[in-house]
Length: 363
Ligand SMILES: Nc1nc2c(ncn2[C@@H]2O[C@H](COP(=O)(O)OP(=O)(O)OP(=O)(O)O)[C@@H](O)[C@H]2O)c(=O)[nH]1
Ligand SMILES: [Mg+2]
Image 1: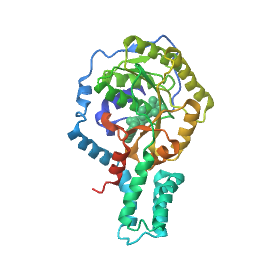
Image 2: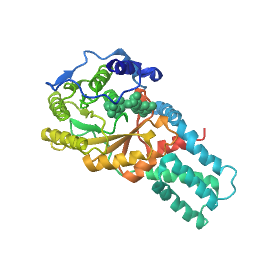
Image 3: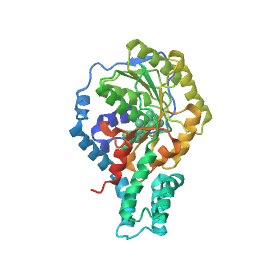
Image 4: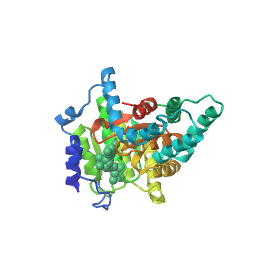
């Protein structure tokens, strides 16, 4: 199991060769004193992993990569939209019904689709909208509007800025933490990771392996110990070391399991003992391929722990990228990042305009 993870992380650049995770194992070992896994030196592969500086010229490459990684959604539901619109001379109620159906099946959800089409139907009725090509633009604009959730961007202040990462099993929490830590490290921030998943076998080793690969220290206890104790020690260590950002991993948990949600509340309380307004950001990681179930996960995590941001992973693996719109619209919680693949650079800050343009792009 452990070997599998290490192999997977080594294979980061060749995801197809990577081993599959196993989320069914049970705890082992007993709690013990905290340990710091301090990488001796940054690995050269970590250097090699670095993407080109995100300057203007790289911007186009990044956009193309986003487009390419979102190609399932582009070729899936957007192509169906195009096929319905193509060759149509006018907008009639049947066309609107068919478009609505395509959007619902692409995981936008009924409420969100209605929100998009109510205004469009009004415009059609008032004869302000009659050209099907313009209708395509209107759908794109409405989607863009719904993706814009009013929220403050992450300020990464005060220091240390404490992030708690939560979510159900296997959604991509630990991988997202590694990608985010790597990104922040490249921006020159001093990052500290906390191996708060003390439950799943090999979870600590998985985060440690990421730490080694990226050159970022990891605070850990033994498997089976209390995750809030790990969080407490990590915050203490972060204060001492003057870290800029502390990211705390947690075990995957079903949103319906009350005792596990209580455990998250305890982690929050314990962190706040050291830094009263921490955690400053609680990120819920959602797997885009789970479709509308992501909405119920978001609702229950929001109730239990509060959420300040969402990361939506595995968008490269679904033709139903409409879930992004549904989550933004129904949860009104900002989507901070999206995961569009297994490579380090495949965690992207979420930009509604760029996202809508990438999926609606015709080339
Ligand atoms: N294609 C793709 N795969 C991803 C993405 N993010 C994560 N994964 C994969 O999803 C799988 C699970 O990732 P983890 O990071 O271990 O998920 P987790 O939520 O920490 O899992 P538990 O700790 O077991 O709850 C791994 O195989 C990752 O490589 C993504 O954006 N795209
Ligand atoms: Mg994990």
